[in-house]
Image 1 (cartoon, each protein chain N blue to C red):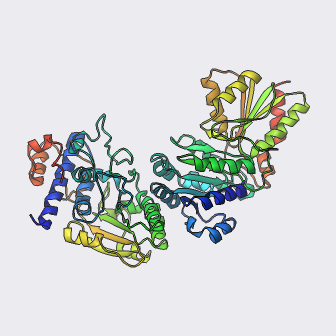
Image 2: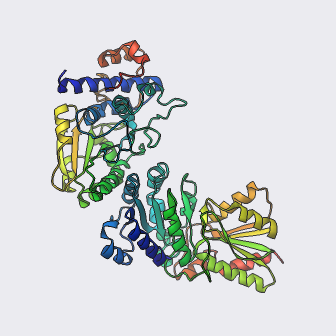
Image 3: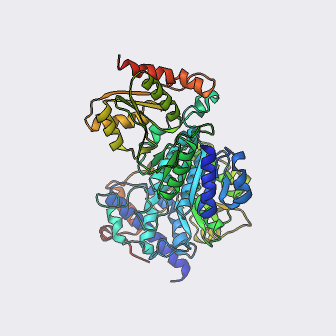
Length: 283
Length: 304
């Protein structure tokens, strides 16, 4: 397999592992996790993020903050595949005795850099990390993924003002722009357009990409621009990978019924046996 | 207190590069020395308390020790979820420093009064809460906060408090201090209002009532032993605070007394609503039920 085929397979695996977690937990924000899966896949498995799964506290590592913490099944799937913990953990998410809940927690899960869940927190936290690394002259980059609905939080715009002021060229923020939020179409609820121009006006280096195109994701994540932080508007599809979930707000937080389950499994390329396994395994 | 805090922090920051003074565009002038001597450890983040505290937590996750400073009301109310989720839940080593405790900014009105901050913050797991009463104590509390590994809320007054102590003394987080001995009644408080409490005790003593005064400089964890001992030995407890009577030191003391099964005579003196009126700090305290004469008279009534 060449590198391009590799990342395709890995992101396919991540989607399977996302569903394995939801299946065993009996719930979860699958739509959001499928939306961001390709971005996280490229970040961890296509030579972007610098990390050592055997040494999660390595000071020179890059940091990734999933500010939209409800998409954590995608993060858990990537961390398991990267070898931070056993893939078997994925079967126990959200259950008694597991450290893995519906939102990620620092200290309890190796590789998780911040406890997120309440929206509007990860950007400032990431700015703090990026600032600390900058003053220490550490060659470490910080990545933060925000939801597009999350950008309705006022604190996001405090951070949006702050990062360019602090000249954080070691910070990249990705907006998972799937245009849906829990209740409806984003734009129907709050007029967010034009996102790109707003962030550019705040002083960010802004690029816009197809958030499911691996090449575009990688190029955007590796973009650096003078002393400015970079903002990537990643156009994505909520529920990407399962036809009846794609672009349907209902799938923000819902499980498939008996009729939907076989369709979902076929489209994700899964067997019943896959469901009983702990996940697709370490890469 | 504010100068003592700034001088102590300056000393700590000069010796330890991990220490950062973060501010939210408040007290800019008093930070002149930092700007001049320690520019890389000073950061005015503008009027954005939530961003400041979230950022402080991120910095702490990289080993820094940020002291994030502005008016207590803005920190505790505006940025509560950031204190809870980013600092306390993650147990990040951030020092949250609120100035203008209670109604000190008297004429500025209730938006600038920290009169419910303790009620909200006391419930937060992992958070230690320190309320110094004098310049010397503010310096000691700042140093103790630095030495303590974990989240701390430091509730400072302003710059007008007189010194409370004649000589150096041992300050230990969680250990209350008996400022005055007495056997008829104990008056408990923390922060700058202890100066008023000492005057209340004087007034009581002049009327033949022997009043003990306890400084609970650490609201959390609270010194249960000193409270229980005072209840057993004096049989009467009054708490005085420039804070709402719900959730502050009066509540904290009541919890200790109730769980110890001590049915003593007990009253909380504090605010019963938002602060009312304008004027000097002394006048506003009088208007809001925490004036010296009022409280002394109420306690005297226990003995009539």
